[in-house]
Amino acid sequence: MISQQEVVRPFPALTTAQRYHLDVFGYVVIPNLLTPDEVGRMKEALYKLRAELQALPDPKTQNVRGAFLMINESHHAYMGAIAPALPALSEYATHPRVVGASEELLGGRARIVEVNAHINTKAPSWNMGDDGQPRFGFHRGLASGYGMHTKNGLYHSNFVKVLTNLTDLGPDDGGTTVIAGSHKIEADDADIIKAAYEDRSLIHQVVVPAGSGLLFTEALMHATGRITSDKERVIIISGYGEPYFPWILMDSHQPGYVLDPKFIATIPEPLRYLFVSKGYIQRAAQYRKLGDPVDPREITPIRW
Ligand SMILES: O=C(O)CCC(=O)C(=O)O
Image 1 (spheres, rainbow, N blue to C red):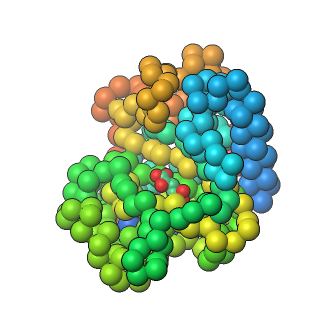
Image 2: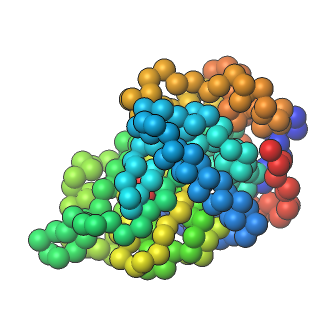
């Protein structure tokens, strides 16, 4: 069981239908994961952080309270390690509904391993196939069959993400694309991508209102979607692993980065376990059955 000294989060976090969808396709969209107020505060924080980062003399090698720019182009800012930079961003990664969703797929206690965000608009050019259809940068952080197990017939993964769109995503607004069911296919990635381009119904795209969360296992092949509208897309992503996972540094030009002890000192005690590992075997395994009802509690997040 998960200790009561830790922040309360919903379990099960998904309805039976959402859990079924997650198992079949490797992802599920959770509507209203964030409230409109949370969406507004987190979006404002991302704009503030982008401005601070872009004002640095050398944004490629310098950071703002640990956060740094991985892509800095006029149509695309990709910010990494953002959780410690501003309270609203720490709030995202530790939000009970976000963490609860990740823990359901992990099958136990989560640890934050990365927190990133994209602010992007239509790209000046896009890779198109010979068939005239767009290509995507499909990738995954786990090989299929690795880091997974089943319990009560349900799929669990030791590296999962919750990606929440802070702007509405219509069909032309670049919602994340995934290759449905690829988390279970132990074939070459290139062959899976080939299959998806041959039959585009295998490629699912997120088309949802702001505040919706995409929960997926990193064994699922996924990619940024193509924006063809004039709208800006803002998304925030947190990655969770088993408690013994490290905080992942996603950029080699900032070697040796670790969480700042000054930031660690500000973490509210019930959220500490999400950032700071207590040891190796701290999974606190927790499993549902498919038919178990979703936890109905409204849990108030801790404000930073
Ligand atoms: O930009 C997106 O929609 C997908 C982000 C992504 O590929 C990732 O988090 O690995």
